[in-house]
Image (cartoon, rainbow, N blue to C red):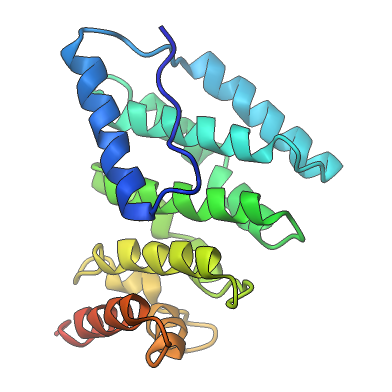
Length: 216
């Protein structure tokens, strides 16, 4: 049987993360093995490269969603570290950064922000997490400029920042400091929304800044 896809983009980030975990639990409880393989991940990567080369974004949402499902499924299975190793070796995070920097449809941007948030929240191996935060990719993603008047995009962006802030500690803080600009983007980009009209955005931003200040 086919492994269930990620929930529709219209759901809230928190609701999607919860539902994704339920899907894992349900499949494992029924003794089913999702139909993911390294070969399928390779095929998805080939499709992603084709999208990058042709600048054709029509199928980008489905490809990114499927890659995220495969990677998170691999993280949930002890014998499948090879999935995230493939992600690292092929610099797929760099591809994600490249796509976000282009003039792509809103649906692609939302899917990427959703996928990145879910990866950050669900990665278990420290080495995998450190890869996500390395090479200054995370700071490039944080500094990406979106249409902040779009409430849906802003919601996913704030959710992405929150997922990063929850991973902030003495070991990971070094990845969030941009030595070239001598700035801490997770803080400087978040505080622009400190007085936002939406209460949930304000609360999230203030909680994030508190986590930064609590670091010794």
